[in-house]
Length: 457
Image (spheres, helix red, strand yellow):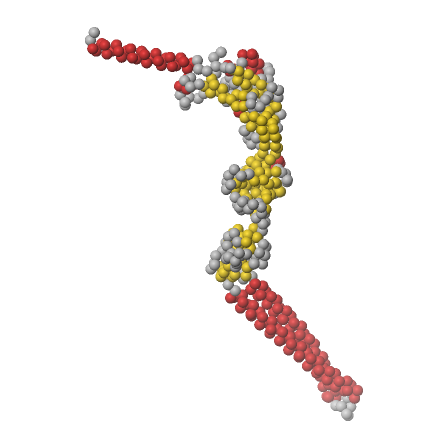
């Protein structure tokens, strides 16, 4: 036999051995068994809640503005003697800032001068009135004597008429003097009003704190010009009491009916991971807002911040507590959703399963009310089935599903105990046909989301 023939024969033998190995590998996969993914029934507490996101806000915030226009020339001192800034503690009436008062001081001085002028005018009018009264008195006496004598040889008719005219003129002049006094008093009152206005504007150049609190925002700098027009410019934001905070939470309209004042609330903030804060619902605001056709209501949650750890405007992840159960049996929702293929069910239960598939009977494993994946599920009260591993098969266990938090569900029923293993899914062993199949080929399940692996009957 030549060397070439020997090489060909050796190659054929190698290919035959490789083919046999591949065939053995594929045939071995056809008999692979399925492994059941399991979980155990646990006893614990269950919290049914509504999740939402909100913002930590001070309970009462005062926006301090300026009522006049001008340039900021200086800041005041806080309770510690430092220049007013972010986080400064201030008392009521404490100076926060000063605005340039040059123009307002001049206006006040001008108004003061006008008041002094008005007072002088009033005094002169009062003096003139006294003089006019004296003249009237003299004219009245002359006129009375002329009336007694009358027009005669002792009193010429012209003189008689002159006394009469003088008396009437004196009466009229007295009335003019009295009117001048009224006018002087009115002018004085107007000047005093202008003075009070000028003095008030002058006082507005000193910005004082209206309350005791903490400055959480300073919105101006020295040298900046504030302009007061239709809206007063905001200079400082003061939180009256940071020991009591609120969380403003946007709640979807579908869940707002479950929220009520006094309802317990728990929330977390990213600034303190793992720490849970407590509060309660204060009020539900009725002015709903719509964003992209989604209607939400703002709910105020009141919380105690005596520790001072909560800072304004932190983002809060809020849980509104709807119901809380303690010391109950719980299973993962996946265990209630699992529905095995017929080949995996213990033979004595297959007829009931087939009848249920044809609509003749209720399936032993089919829950009437399966808990959904959403948070905040209520009491279902539905009859459900758990599947227990039985060697290479599974068998059903009838239970009643209760409240769910979206991950775990309360269950009740006979033959239930803590630590009981239940099936949540099926996973093929390594080396099965499923392992060698194309990962991009779609798979079709006969029993549900977890029944992708069948067992030969």
